[in-house]
Structure formats: structure tokens, C-alpha cells
Image (cartoon, rainbow, N blue to C red):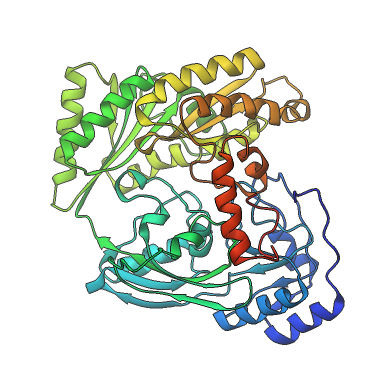
Length: 474
């Protein structure tokens, strides 16, 4: 099933049962209220739904899902609607938002854990951890809007994966409503539980296909006492990889983020994003943003000084600027985080969230650039991303005078060119955004028959009626 296929209309009797089960404040049919939930950030999809459900408790979620299961009515779960592959957009399904599941249920610093509900935003989760003297390290550009439930459902990555891992690595326990309306109670705070399949992992990255995540227990970490951020200039991606290896060795694992940015993308940020400025006088071909964090006062700053000094001496970097304040650190990070927004005024294009082995990033970029040029010589390529974990955002845009609609029409063929190179480097066509509607069918070309069969069998066992997000994942 794809986004263009239609579903039977939801019967009025089902709508009435859902309204009665959730009561006043638990649903809306108002088109104005629903509209923001029907379009994803890039504007690629605009969906439709007969009703928006906004349950306030796990019991209300379960009641709604039981009704839909009884009638075979499909459900699209939605968190903060910040997804970039369309998995959260309904096309006739009942839309169930977790935005009113808002409680921070428990923070236990001695366990380095906190339990909160799916509608808590990532920023609020960070703040709850900080208030308890701890840290929740997941960080991404949409953290003020993105919710914990959505982050788990898509196995969010972000900028700290190098040190702390993906969302999958940060979850201790999950509570979810299964496709039959039963509640899966798995909110444990244990680091060790070797008693069979780790069932919570099925929901992480499952994109809402195996149930609705309603709460989670997350890992917390000690707060850092020093932090250093720098932007440096390098001649090539190969030099950045060598610098990454040196940074990890120099700091004994204190590298929190290591972000690569091509000159072209930086040019668009400076042009299209207000109140930004060139960080390096030399305007190099490639930039690297480095963030170090340490548990000792002054430790990160000292480590950054040592790293940059030896990198200059050995010719690894050509220029550098070290943030001197929290405000300047935020300015540096804004140059990286606004890359996606800066591309919009340039006409949009074919966006690729890919990963390859870190050691092969330089080769991949060279081969992908050549393949794109051969396919569409006028295209412009922006490369940026989290090279510390092998994740690149490889975006292909039209030339300045090219017809945007005609260029977008080439998206499937153009993406196949890029993803073909990714596959040859034993990479992934979705590093952190998921498959959603955008890549579900294309993923079949890169998954083995055995992988597809296993994933389909898991889904059939848990959701035999296929009512949960039916257009996503095989």
C-alpha cells in the first residue's frame, strides 16, 4: 500500500465510538485544528483524516486502538510531526496524536534513568534530566518540537551519536499499545535483563507499525563540566577522517560531535539564513565542526587546544576558530543546523540521508559526485552531516536557472543513482530518518529477501490486520 492508494471511508458508527471513548478534549474534527498535522515539514505530502484523536492517557490510547482493531480501521500514529519521510502523514487513516501524553512520570538519578510519556518534547526531556543533575544527550535541530515517542519510533540519531549512540541505545524500557489494544508493560530501569528477546527493540525504529509508544524509560548520564566547540577548515573529506581519528585518540572518547560541511552548503546558509556570518576568514572548501566535552573543569578546552595545535603542525587543518562563549558556540552550531532550511530557497531537490563506513566516506563522495554529474550535469550537490558516525546528508539541487518541477520529477531516478553508490559501499539508504512513505518500496531493492521476509513475519504476528501505519515498512 502506498500514499496514492485509497482506504475505505471510516464508518460514522466507528467515529461515534471513538468520540465516546475519548470524551471531550480527546478528539477533533475541526479542519483548522487538524490541518497542521496533515503536512510534513518539506511540504512533500498533504494527507487527510476523518478525525484527529488526542488521547491523554495510555488507557485512552488503548480504548481507541481496540475500537479501530474491532472494525479493521487503520491508524496513523503521530508525534511532533517533524519526520522527513512522510511516515506520520495519514491518507484516510484515523490520525492518533500523542501530543497530550505529557507527563514526566519519574526521574531516578541514582538509576540514571527517567520515565516520561510519548508527547514530551526532546527539549523538555533534556530539561527534566538537567533539573535532576543529569543529562539526556540526544540532540537534533527539531528538539523543541520533536517528541520522545516519535524519536523512539524513528530511532532518531542527531549530533551526539558518535559518543552516545542512536535513540535505540538510550532506551531502557517501553510502554506501548499493541495493534489489538492491549498494553505492553515494559518500563523497566534495568541495564541487564537477559531473559529472552529484547522486545522493546521491536518498537524502536518500527515507525508505529507494531503499536503506539505511550511512554519510555530513558538512560541518563552525568553532566559535563567543560565543553569546547571549534570550526576548522580542511582540504578534503579524507583530511577530516584523519582528524576525527586523531581527535578520538587525543581525547580518549570525549568527542561529542564531529560534523562535516561542504563550502557550497555553507554559502547557502550565509546567504539564506539571517544573522549568520562566515566563521573562517579563509573560506575553505570543507568545514568541520568539533565539539569536545569533559567531566573535569577546563578539560575540554585543554584537549581542543592540544588537538588543534598538532593538527596545524601536521597540515591537517588550514584554519580554525574556537568558540569563546556560549553564544558563540550556539552561533557555530546554527551554521550546521540550518543547512536543511538554507536549501529550501535554492529550489529544494533530491535529499538523501545515507550512511557508509566512516573510512570510505571520501571515496563515496567522489564516486557519488561523479555519478550525479553523469546523470544530471547541471545539478548542484551539498554534503553535510555526522561523519563521526558515518551519516551524510547528500542533497542534490537544481541549477539556479533550472525548472524546479522538472528537476523534482527526476527524483526517483536521481535517488537511485545516489543510493546505488551507497549500496556499493555497503551503506544504508536511511541512516536516521527511517523509511516512511518515501523509501519503503525502494528499500526492497537493498534488503535481501530473507530480511524482508523476517520483518514481514514479525509484523504479521503482531499486527495481522495491518491496521498500524499500513503504508509504511513492506
